[in-house]
Amino acid sequence: MLLDLKLLTLAADTAMASLDNPRHRAIAANYRLHAMLEVSGRWEEIFTPQMTVERPFYRIASGEGVMDLDGTEAVQSFYKGLHATDTTVMILEHEHLIIDDNGFASEALYHTFMTGAAAQARGHADADPAGTYVEQRWVCMIWPYDDKGRMIGERVYPAPTATLVECPRADFLTIADARRVFDPLIAQAQAQLAGG
Image (cartoon, rainbow, N blue to C red):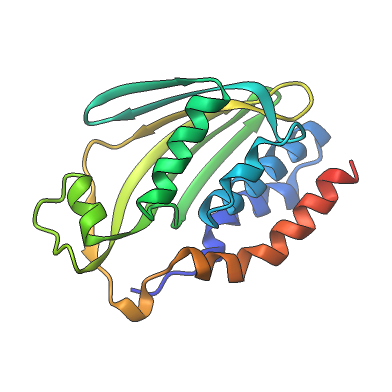
């Protein structure tokens, strides 16, 4: 299993190349930068005043129910948890992205790289704790944005079932791999955002 990290931003890249509406392009650019920062373990940089509103709100569904995260501290705790379990590296495939003035909706097949221990913690009881895996799951998301093109929050609705595929260590992607690919692209995107 060999997946290209740059698939992560393919839908946003395609949207930015085809959209004429400046507000829609700004939303796509924000989403693209957010995704690269998250996957690279640089989640703290998502919470700049240029990217995210002062009080973001996330609603995330899972097999355990629905979790509401209200405010920066709650949302940042969620990202800290992802980082601590090394489950931030993901690739999106077959993403369908719809953007309007209020934000975007997305559907994609997520390939999330995780250790066997992390897979067990996510309910994959048969995973070898010493192994490396990719969890494949369809996810629908809705992200509202404000009139400045800043993310207000996320609504994330994953499919109730997922497939866990063993991943050879040679193909297993880490945060270091993500940073090698995305750090130069992040620097470009942040410079463009700062330039207005």
